[in-house]
Amino acid sequence: VQGVPDLRPAFRLDLKDTVTGDEFSAVVVHLKSMRGGPAVSGKVRYQQCAILAGKLGANFIGTIAGDWNMILDKAASGAINDLEPLFKAGFVLLNANDTTGTHSGGSRLDGYVSLNFGGLGQLTVHQFYSDPTIGRGLTDHALLMAEK
Image (cartoon, rainbow, N blue to C red; front, side, top):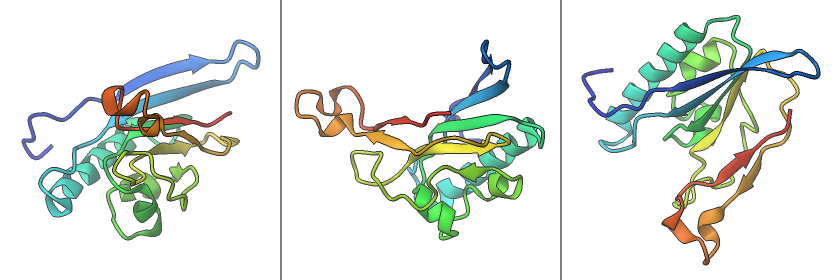
């Protein structure tokens, strides 16, 4: 995207629940960093979201989760448009208006965006970086969980 050399690929797992037979996918992302400021990096993340929406398609069943490198509650409110291609494709951000920090800097950068995947439960955020015995030595991002 735009000649940026260090973008990270998305990782997709196609899964099947052996009890119910339900099939779904989980995609993990780590989008363009915020380096360069929102005017530059936001355009790259917008294009990454457009690529995801196009490649996954309208029949995608599952969730995309990870470090979006944008403030997700601002994306949900329309204050930034990085997620717009996914929203236009019908994807929904779990707990869209939640401002709980998922990064040691205090912002909500991590979350789940799902399509055709109803029943994803309340988002739980475990801020390991705030534990003095762990600190940022393990990660500067929280662990997120949502039950299906």
